[in-house]
Image 1 (tube, rainbow, N blue to C red):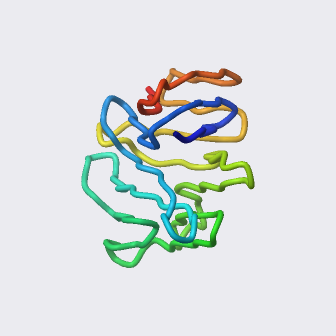
Image 2 (image 1 turned 90 degrees about the horizontal axis):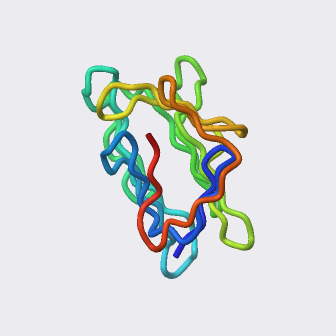
Image 3 (image 1 turned 120 degrees about the horizontal axis):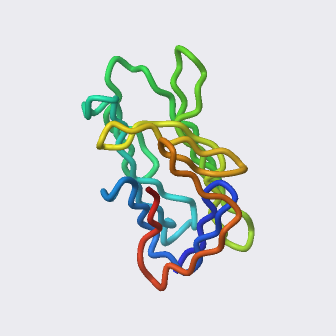
Length: 142
């Protein structure tokens, strides 16, 4: 089980899957030997076309080499190189809490998800300062 903070919302007892706009979009885990944070993620444009793909915190698809992945034992981030815009940043603390406090990307349905340290929002839907027990299931956003 994994506790994940998205914006200011705490999701306890998650299986590491993050469902956004009704579609599994992110998978978080830990490397069994090193404990390093592992992120699986696909980046889409507003029309649903894939721009980049991250598998086990490694950039495996990077259209036009437009994105840069930074990783350390407790941090994984993806940045658009031309603008410096953070697509996502995940960080773990010593207790194992995973924080997703910065990011901006389109869902597979073409809606913009924005995550700040205060909230997450998709269109007019926003959530902040809530604690949700995922009961061993996924984190659900949107």
